Image (cartoon, rainbow over all chains, first blue to last red; front, side, top):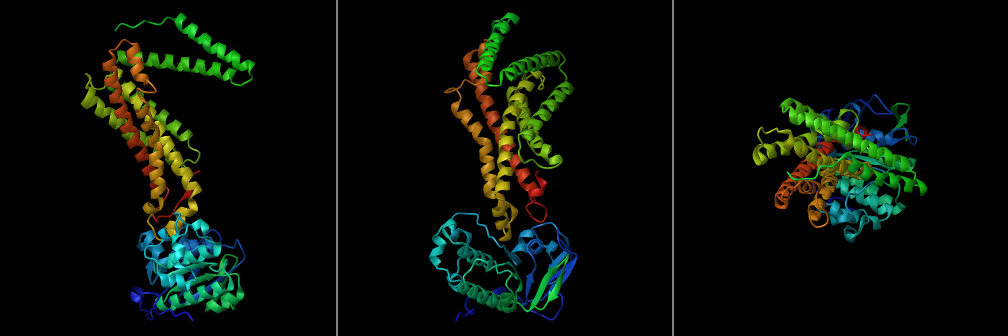
Length: 219
Length: 263
């Protein structure tokens, strides 16, 4: 069984207090398809998000990472996104897109200090760092993109179908890793998934897109 | 100066060659025989017109007229740069980014040359100022147009790659760095090639003109070397400036990639 304890250096973990400004808050957020949305997700909480293709899930996640212009305000632990430069916000609010892209040829060049333990937990060999990205399978690339994102120790994880291209064993690994990461970093996780069983496994609250808004659902 | 004055008859003989070429292309059904004649007429008209303008300008040496002429040349160059862009910036920027960079580099280099190097009396003497500025603008225009075109087309193609870097928390500067470097280089390559070929493959036009007009070859060569340096620096600075401003404009204050700013 995978043990998370040695995996993440806990220095940056934030102490949770009872203030209700802790976590990710959306105030009247509007995107192309959605809004205005008010939403509060607490530290250490994972919520699932579902909805038909094209309903605006991915665009919502992009707005949260401040990649697209949007209305309203997003804040983390009471700190507005606007209070810091865009790139610093995106280091704290990490987006894993459904189709990750790579900017240099070799896998390893996308990592500052590759952690063997992290790759191992994802079922990847360290040798993969020597490979060219083009040589990796879709599933390998999806897991590598997750490892790449976790390097920044984001406090919020926006996961857009993170296990869509994975075999069952890898799905299990990724779920276990993200569970450990969430607990250890008290991270906020928004998990987009089309798989009802997975939503039930990974998330404590469940949301679905209805019209221009979000509604809480049982699974 | 001891050069042979051309008569209208001389030009007429040369024009017969173009007419002949046009006839031949008609026979070969190249579909450009009309265009060829039209272009020959157009170039004649434009050059005669500029001849008249320069004559007037030389006769009335006044800073205001020269400034007006320079402005017209700049705006025309800016228009050409804009028209060469497949993906141009929306609004004022589409015209402004190239024009402003050309203004900054070409005018600065021309002024430095007139005030510090050639030092005619007065410094804005049109016989020096206008051809110099023309050569600067003509070459800078190419660099700016190439650099901008490479930048915007690369960003279009590699949009997702740039966004992957932004998602990873890189600054906009890091996310565009490779493309920006590449674009600046592309804009400056023709100028490098021209310097390499000068005198070996091609006799540059300005030098040729001076020699035809009876100038001492060594004197013409010195002028040409000066011009090569000026063109190189003007094109280089102009291209860097244009690519720099344009790259900045591709991102907003939240460091988002804004492809909606180019059409």
